[in-house]
Figure (cartoon, rainbow, N blue to C red):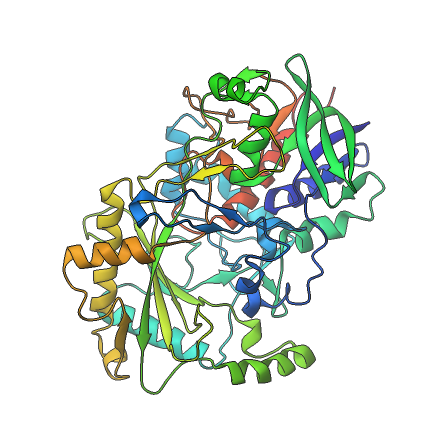
Length: 524
């Protein structure tokens, strides 16, 4: 028997495994459905999108979306050591301080900005910025991208144009303020991806009190009465059982975590009974409150071209393999902005990314500007399709169910069109390719949004933290109505943060580790 079982070796799970096993008296088992992070391109920043749809992706799809002309969306999630931190775009953004103060206002004591900032700093090894907002002694390397043409040309042009347009230059989106235009920070080290597995799990694997099993798909949490005592999992074609004397900690993410709770008898009683699952705890909020940052991509041509061609990539592969330098060490969206669609708003509600990468693999596109909705009103859900733990659940994000989300994105698109009229872009003869100059009216732009809307892959909220009737976990992340079970991942966010969600998920893991290690149970 082990003390702690961690389900999922992702952004939070890897950190928890490291922190809990640092005490040699704690015996920790971490179970990961995927395999090792040994894919040849996994560490190469440039190739991050190539893993979508691969064997290291869960390959989820949404239900057809009425608001998107019936389209299904592909929702990639990392099925590999490191979880989605092993396949994401590596952007390190914490969100706005307002987000965490809002969490606290919703009844989550201890989750306000001043309370969570020390946990961000504890994890971080910031390589370029020194300030009271950053840590330099943590395990997670964080840096900014260097100057490699044409990435650097796009960075400079975007920043100069933004300032001419009236946006302030912001040297640190994770500092005193978020608003403005600037460079993104990334979880990279020596021009390679630096995942949660690199930061926390791998350095701890030589500890005798930490065990990690890959290709282990957890199918059920086991209970004795109302207490979680272990898990069932499939490994190498066999059903196996592991038992925990202290806690089972669910770190599966916004899709897997609610699915596993439902399969284990925790969720809306009517849904569980429909699938023949005995009810352990009637929690109607399990799987509800699903949120995401929807985005739309605008495509541009310029003269001289900024594009990175397939021929250049082939040459860059050789340079990167021999020197770990060049464009392959870069990411796709090195520069961006946090902006307000209305000047009187208190905080930004749109995030921009600018990239010289062609999402389609063609050579003819010079750069993109992606418009991302920061605080959506839409709320979706995750539900069981059946009681088969290996069948993907129903994923219903309800994109554009709320017309306010469409209006906000449309305003963001119009702001980018104004940005392109500034001299840095006009001096380069920039032409909008998509949506394109003929698409002008609200109706035409709404049609474009319905046809082209994408996701920023920031899924969260389905096991929300709080004290209201739909809350799944308490502020200490313990699941309501049962004992010995916590959820520690992006699913506990009561509301999505205004920015990329990987860094906040790691912070949640850091804070959870502190709560677990200082709990009365730990010292019993």
